[in-house]
Length: 272
Image 1: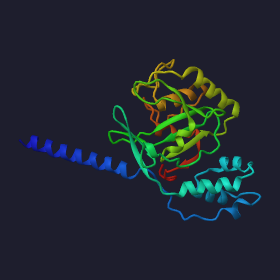
Image 2 (image 1 turned 90 degrees about the vertical axis):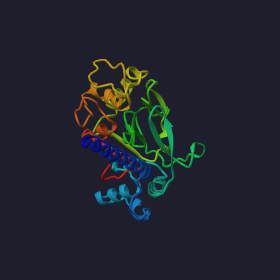
Image 3 (image 1 turned 135 degrees about the vertical axis):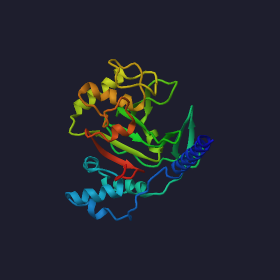
């Protein structure tokens, strides 16, 4: 009898905890930076930036130094940075899309018929990694991750969901997620990044999705979103799994010491 009562109490606590966490996921789909907007134009007109300048730009726009330096080469640099700032600091609305069998994906807007572009992608190149934590299943915010493989046509290679195969996607769909992070290998040459993206296109496209796929495959034959990215880099000597586990999750990759953050949106830059 005591065991039965204990089981009931444990079950009730478990259900309540899961319910509260599920509500938390609904209520916290996006992080809005808690900083006041500042006029960036006087800073952006300077001939060179200090480390403090780059830090302020990052806090106001979500753009790191490599992206800022690349954008400085464009004629409308100040205008672009101010647009990034407006999007980065703006409040947004979010709705949910059901993805069978048990996943919810959060998008910016009020409904599928009224979705809104939340931000603009920073300049991207082949081999760059894109991440969002906008997907969750059974109360777990696992996120989604993809790889830029054709910067000219704006295409990523992604493994999406059970019953599908890894395929090319329009990169601009990422601008409708409430959270986003762009990363790349530290100090990698453009030729290496091209080799990685070309390998992914040749060897990792069309693989059946299997959420239980592990890193132990000698020749990739199944995959899922985070494994696909891991599989793209591993043959070139980069183990992007920061935990070294049997399976690899999107968060395991974005915290890899081999990567640097280029752009962040809707995520806490300190905690996420």
